[in-house]
Amino acid sequence: MPTILLLHGPNLNLLGQREPEIYGTATLDDYVSACTAWSRDLGFELEHLQSNHEGVLVDAIHAARQRCAAIVINAGAFTHYAWSLHDALATFTGPIIEVHISQPNAREPWRHTSVIAPVATGSIAGFGLLGYQLALEAVSRLVR
Image 1 (cartoon, rainbow, N blue to C red):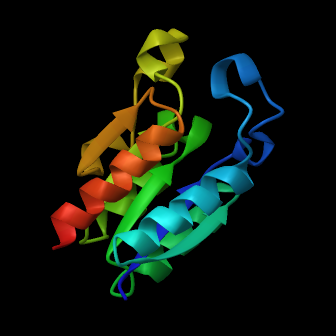
Image 2 (image 1 turned 30 degrees about the vertical axis):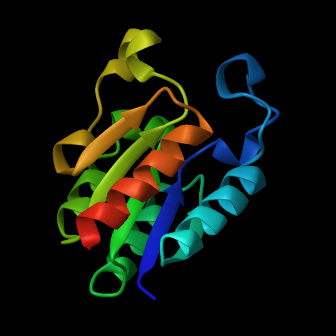
């Protein structure tokens, strides 16, 4: 089965605890479990990595080249300034879906710019866990 790499950036390990009024009460494990099940239903394996360190995510993107069919990424705060993630993602030839639990454009002005979006196939924001399901469905349609 083809593999989808699911990446989470800084502070997303605190889902369910950090600002539940914005991010909800589901934990990162809840997100990964749901995405694993949805991926299997779509005929994909899911690999997951969360890191609070930019270079770890860059290394994971590099390792996904020629190995993974697609990348789904919630880069967290790295979305807004981590040009090294932008450059690494630009080397990946499969679909890249940027996903956000909340709607960045409805929040603080510094969240309105994404350095990921220019190299992403598409972006999904503001739908919570549903956004991940939509991202995986998009990957399935784009890969097949």
